[in-house]
Image (cartoon, rainbow, N blue to C red; front, side, top):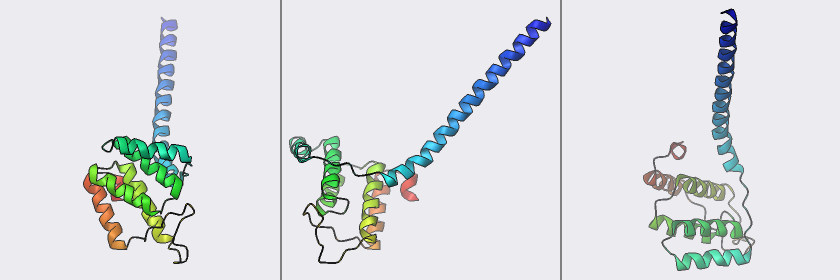
Length: 161
């Protein structure tokens, strides 16, 4: 009987270890959420070649109501022209007229607009390196209106913060 009790104790210890592993996994998930936000802010713009840029533009022309085609087009413009180029804002505005944008798209858009506000350039440099015209930075009221549009599409706590 004593041997059976010892075996049960060992089994209980193994179960406790499994629970600890699950708790550690849960903790890792929490860290991922926190780190995910930081990674999003530090995400680099991935270059898009001219051929891929043209392919994404053609795909959008062929499928003008394809959400993913719009998303890929916005990514291509951002990669090709930068985060504060006029074509990027125009593409986002067009997409927002057709679809409710997912929270990550709104957050990226708002982040780029805030970047443009912080990095106002002198009028002599009115274009980005690709030759596209830079956007005029939004006023604080226009940025607030963009936040309101974003929260109108989706209830997302990150957009409210």
